[in-house]
Length: 269
Image (tube, rainbow, N blue to C red):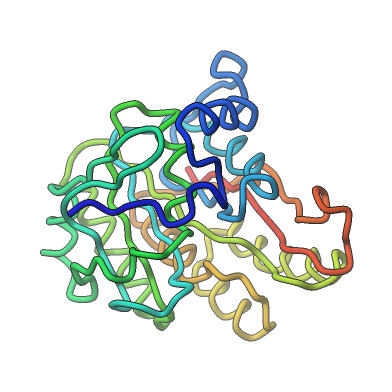
């Protein structure tokens, strides 16, 4: 199974040369950034002109292993609620990225929630936009793509435990990337206030608090499910700290602060 790009040429440059040049601008120089071990990262998924600098700055600060689990929200509603692409490769402008079939198989065998399903991935951008950054920083990259629809907090916590168990069984370094944007289409003042409430729970490594706050406060954080799941998995894997690398919004690029989308980059270690 080969998955073809859905948003190349729209969310990010579609040719290898132009994409490489863009990433060189967005990712701080390798020598200038001290790499740190991380269990998980939270990274935004808008077009690179808006959120690419946050994603690049965040991912450049961590050691990217050869195996990366990417969790993203389902924007289209197609496919299973917990959809894992478990075989094949993603065709990307900078070259094909193979699925880590060994780790995907471990997760599917451990979790009754996860389903092998390629339909949910066909048009979804939230995972795809992370891949060029990861490719740029790790030449031997393999991925386990997981698209998540709306599931309960209990299911997020359970899935997080399954992911952690699969990683432990795998026995080699694995990074979890949770793909999310923050508040959508509110004023900068409103978005910043709402996002701060969500970010406080991430900093406290509190997946239940994040989930309930986003729902109760009407925070339009599209990747709350992936982030809750990643937090649960990270705690199972011994995480003790979450650091916000950068928070900004689309108004920084567009100049319009009346309706912004918030972006956050976070390292969990």
